[in-house]
Image (cartoon, rainbow, N blue to C red; front, side, top):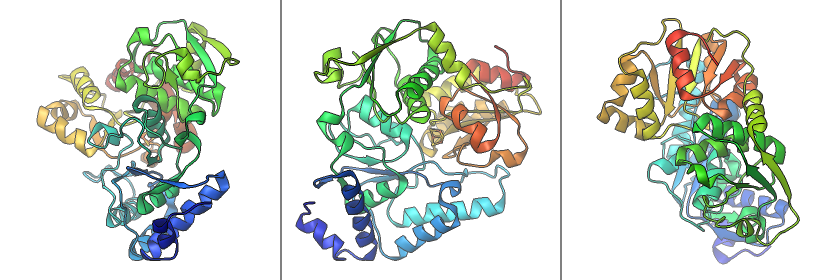
Length: 409
Ligand code: F3S
């Protein structure tokens, strides 16, 4: 494998022990994937920062790397964590304290302590064609597909190592030939709202595994950014999807031919009403219709989504024995506060959380059993990760469940 002088210097410890270890990791990954060289990146996004992922050993590793002088050299953001630093949600002290130490460790290495899975909503927006090293599967599929940036599905440690060295191995989705579509889906039913996009993403992700799906017929629905975010998150959780093309919607798919990059012998699947219903079915495992926990905003909500929820809750009050968490990050929450949306949400008895991820936190210790959500990713992971029974559907249904304590079809 070819290394330039800068890379060799780091590998020889010329930038300190922390950077040497990071470069050693990058070279090892490059060798595993057969990359011929390393390429410079514009930004990195570290994921897996929750205590659930790191454990105490991981916490000590982060602190050790910071003490060994590892410092990021490109803008490096942090993914969600398992606490809300702005408030006490009742989570155990022996969970909160180590989680805060993990965050502090990454911040000491120069990462932005913004802790969100949607850093592209607030100032960290990769450009078309830019090479980046982001972890967090929902963010990776969004940056590749919707923005046209070039990113592999990094793990937390490899994204960290890329942030510290400024390089990533040149393989996978950094190369043109690996960004071509692998299977075609003809959309023949109506797709309306985020829950439909999530159900569709789940069905497709489950079916394609790691292939790049090409969606034909989505352009007529003019999907919003948030709908594409949720569809991608669903594909990435149900399968290993790191990129999709939507013809007439995403930048590398102006035509079907462009999306497939000249390949002609691909399979075509019709995606209709039956497949959409199957997606909903895959994401629902509720038994009792009595809901005690409503959590929405996974990936974190945009300002527009927060405003819609504030308007739905305006002047109402959620049922006494129901807890409702609406998830976003500190930047959007700060704007929501200024604009009065936060007040409406809090007046209704709901909580607008900051930088928190339900799946990577431990809300189950608070005694909840049945979750209602509009998130295809949370609905996919929460039964296994948190032990919840789950009802999956639109924001309107989730808000109604919060107000009444009942899930209705
Ligand atoms: Fe974000 Fe956690 Fe959901 S990382 S996409 S809030 S599972």
